[in-house]
Length: 120
Image (tube, rainbow, N blue to C red):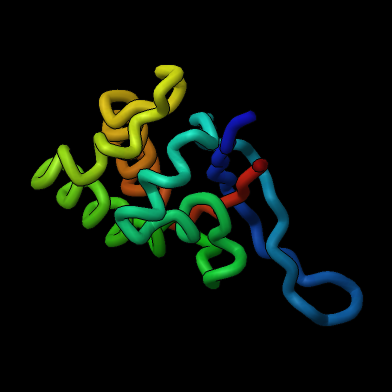
């Protein structure tokens, strides 16, 4: 089981009802990571932002940028705090999660207006 994150370009259209609707267009970015890293993300206080962004009001990549920056800095500053949550089976390790977060941050910086979607 894994978490898959997506960033989509969007277009705002005004429909016949007079309301504006954001329509997902092209996928800009996607990547996945094991659910075994949930405890590590929870330790850092960023689980909800990654696994359940819609529940905490995060809809666009630009909203994740400060959260990802803090998560990366915290993990780099205190690896032992996070490594204690490494999965015993090897599927869900600090050494894999940190680069994943960096890659996600790079995508959010590249596509700040992109809409976030997750599959869990």
